[in-house]
Amino acid sequence: FVSERNSFLFSVGFVLRRSSDPRPFQPIISKWAQSLQHLEMETRFLSNLTTRPRVQSLLEQILVSLNSINQECNLAISPSCVLHLRHFQPPRTPAHPVPDYAVPVL
Image (cartoon, rainbow, N blue to C red):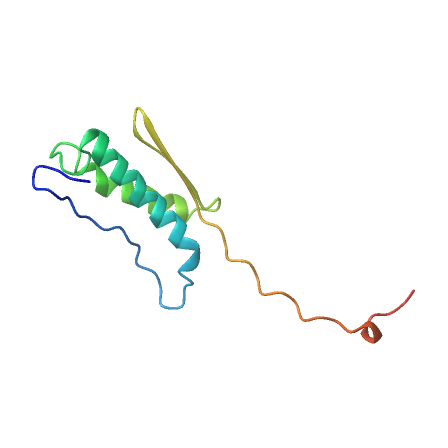
C-alpha cells in the first residue's frame, strides 16, 4: 500500500505464553493484518486520526472474545466491514498403532 509518503508500514502480533503453541494464532494474525491493510486502503483506518484510537478497543475486543468459551470473535469494524475470527486448537498427535494381537476379539 502506498500513501503520500510512498509507504505505510505496520505490524500485527499477539503476545503469548512461552509454553503456548503459536500455530493456531497464525491464521488469526494474518486475517487481522489483511483486514487492517484493506481498511487502510479503502478508508485510511490507521492513518486517520479520528479512527486510529478505535484500534485499541478492537484489540481488546479480540482478546476478550478469543479467550471466551467459544473462542471466536465477530467484530463490526465499520458499516461495510465485519471481521470473523476463530481460534482452532492444533490437531492432536495421532495415536500409536495398535498391533492386531493387542485387540481382544469378541
